[in-house]
Length: 251
Image 1: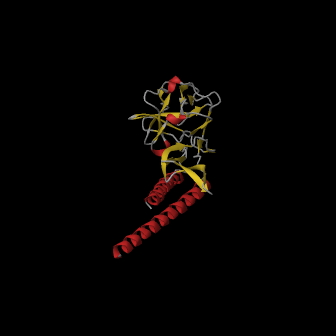
Image 2: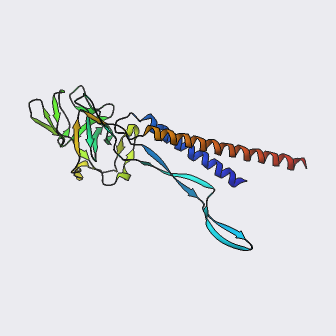
Image 3: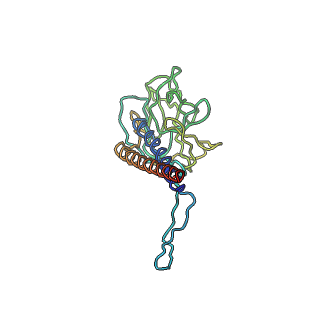
């Protein structure tokens, strides 16, 4: 009886967390550069399952009454590039991340929906300024050009800076924060790793999220049905327990 409680309850908790993650994916489907997440589960207290027939027994596999969440993993697949009419929009075609200098450290992002702040610096609104090889990128006005190699030139063709593209060696070490941003491990220096050779920047474009809306919606519906099934099982076990207690008490 108690193992049934554990199984149903762990199923509800796992599916609820899955629904939350999928809902966050759907919520950020229109966030440029956003990477979807997936829940990875694991089993707890696995036991061997045996078949007994005609006095003979044989191991047929393993089973676990409880399933728990092991970790959340990001899908680092690229999104579709969308052409815009904004000169501050820059997309990464290939691997790597923009580096944003925030007030509390460096952030990595694929969101190239930038703008110029009041002082003429290229920034990701609400996060910080875009980092280049010569420090944070100061442009001054919207008359500038970004070449595929990341070089930024003013309206007269003078070199200003070059956008830094970071390519962490261990993608799994990135820590996700809000709005599709990532932070690297302590001591990470974007200059320590050269940018990918095949990566180019595209001005007047942004990379859309890699969230497949229809797929996410179908998975979240499946998770909701699983949650409801576990909830029904838990209610049934509770009713059986109450009837058992009442009948034993009446004897």
